[in-house]
Length: 162
Image (cartoon, rainbow, N blue to C red; front, side):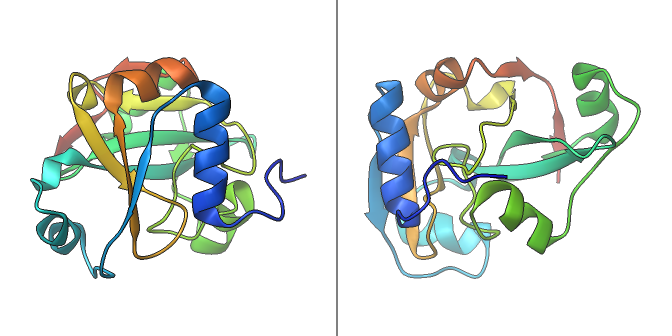
């Protein structure tokens, strides 16, 4: 698998991909956080504004991204129904890194090593979101609707409260 952004740092990958997609993204440095709640607190935002990008593996070995707002978790039955498959799973950290070029906690579809399909929970529409920025200690702020449109993401109810 070739990495389309090889040689760039994580934050450079995001900026390059956002520019290519015509997206405005603001990457900010922040103290490292040990949890989503801690990251929200240091950024001065509500936890549900933070969108976790989860790498999901299909049974055929391909991947997809699931965009999940803070305070929510993937509903596997809902996501499987939307994707149209019977089996999905979260890969281990090493496989997620190999599939995206990003470590867990920094993953974003922007600048990923491969352009995987994106599935977004409907609750991230209509406002700015914060997400992984390709490097620990950084967050990327972007309009949720613009992000979804730039990836042609499938939007639906794919989560349940944590």
